[in-house]
View 1 (cartoon, helix red, strand yellow):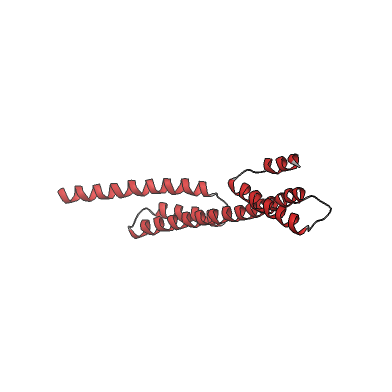
View 2: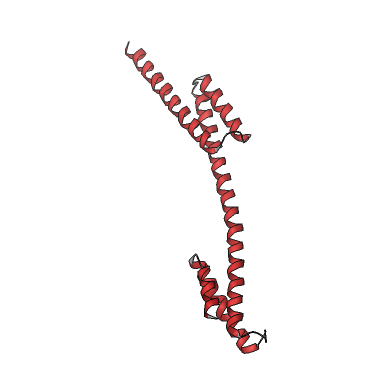
Length: 150
């Protein structure tokens, strides 16, 4: 019995797992000891088996929810990158910036939207395009100041 309990506790890898074992085990023990639900097994074995089952169910739920959370986070990141790219494209077009930069942004966002490039690649391209936009903007401001002085 003690060995079985040790095996159950060895599977505990998080505080939530321990909570499941500490809640399910005593409840199963009390039910079997009082009601003798499973007559051919001692209450301690029923508690260990119920704890194992509860722990297994919790881990399955964690895996399914974890995968769902990861997919949602990836989708949020993807949407955020697309929004940032569109905002930079709009700003470039509105300011009358480089046609090359606007076309490059548009092409890269289409590649990303089609799943050809990864989020990291789009992030890198957006950083490069932002630097190009800032350089163009600075040069435009500098030339405007020189014209007003001259």
